[in-house]
Amino acid sequence: MDTCGFRSSCVFYNDLKEKRPVTLGYIKEEYCDSNYSLCARFMVYTARGPCTVSKYLFPEDIHEACKILDELN
Ligand code: SF4
Image (cartoon, rainbow, N blue to C red; front, side, top):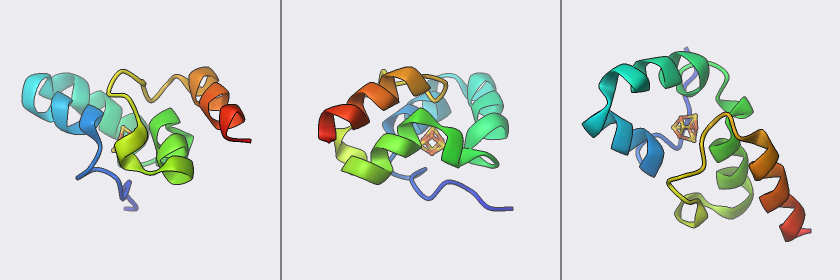
């Protein structure tokens, strides 16, 4: 299975791993271990690099990711 290559540097992922493992299970199933290219964080990481993404950007928040990416253009 293909997994997201940003897992070790993703603050959101690592925060959930430590504090909310049940929620992480859902996120992994929906994004990290499957459809990671649809994750808002992945989209911004790919364009700007892992250190530039707020830990408060949720994987579902495509609208916010688009706003961030638009600001780059
Ligand atoms: S939350 Fe998104 S960027 Fe972070 S590890 Fe999962 S798929 Fe990758």
